[in-house]
Length: 601
Image 1 (spheres, rainbow, N blue to C red):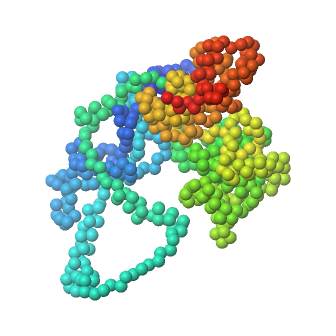
Image 2: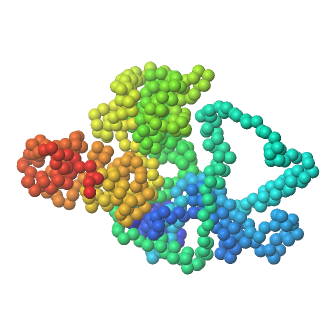
Image 3: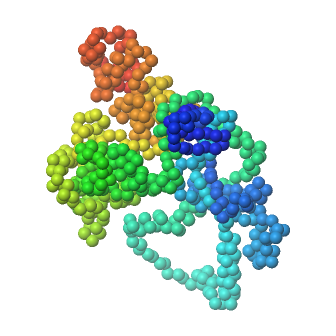
């Protein structure tokens, strides 16, 4: 994947191997020093994983001599565990030859511990005037392991027990069992509660069991300057055979790859929002950030006002309409922002919000039934309800997290009444988990009390992968003009031009919608991606008219199309243009033109 950008506006200066990000002072200083092609690569093997290994207990001046001392390397890829055995110099002055033979070792084992992921990292290499980036799968810190000491202690305990048995202090249970009958013991174990199951799943014993179940995979270790390592590095620097269009501006590109300082990024990853960051956002971005990444999913209107001190009230309400819903006089984050693109999850969450829209407390049995009907497991349901309600075990109910905001209800009765009416209209659909999801521009979309799942959900993909998917969508649409989501997934997996976008092949439909929107492609009925214009200017006016028809319904009749074309375009459409457009976008079924699925062979 090839990305080329002249970063004049953002003032990124490349000076040999040094990269500096400076704020422009004058137009004279703000100049391009060098242009670089940027390649995102996974090498010849798309399943390859790159690990970043750190040695926090070893100073940079005294690195491990891995090329000379490494005797074994093993990995557990599912658990992301690595062990390296380093040979010890028994003749060295730091080796104690007088210690107990039972704890003497000839190799030292370095065992990994995961580093919490606060950002996306990549390995970068400059080759032939280009920058090649390879994503890092995981970062690990390696420290010396002392399992040999534990084994020595265990051996010592075993010897003591054997000595006690010889002296008769312990009975041999196996011998006793062979000479006498042992009564059969039966136990009735209580069913494990949800809380007990959760504690067990997070217990050290359970996690250790999961780790022990995966077998170690032995690896071959090669030095950094070895021929094998050189060949591998070279394979990562092979440009893609096809050039993909770069669709981001300079400022958006730099914001994507350098979102902020490490500390700020860590705050954002953890969901925390700094005042400085909020003040740098527009009103709409600020409101979205409060509900999407804030610790609380429920905000009173007065708090939202305090976070937007310089904004008009009408503008605040318009922003709230996009990202929140009114419940008990409080504003609650929309399910589209909080459910990771999972349609079932945000439909279930909407049903929960509906319950609390009309009652401050909801019986526990009703909450459990909602989760059961939606097919969600206990842990997912507990996390979902935990953001909007607390469990009162004594009363057997869930209580809405915030008290009713009577001040807002009294001050804005029209808004509250409209919200109540919208919830009442949605009762039938939400209870059957078939909420209608209006698209942008649909009737009622501007209503401030619209249901919370309206519109397209934000992307949850990493920035680099999201950009790659956008570029891949642009390429396939230029080639096919019309494609369905199933065919797009197949193309991402099979076509080399997809590059790292292959990792998004199994993404949700919403991710494809987001990518298409970013490339100005049309999305019809959330199932079909269409190139908005073609190179033939004589075809585009009629093509646009047909696409407008298809955006409203999936079947067309020739008479209505031609009548509309005559009215809008001011004349008859040539037969060649008519056939070319309709055959590209539709198929004939029962005397009508039906919209293609985009998944045809």
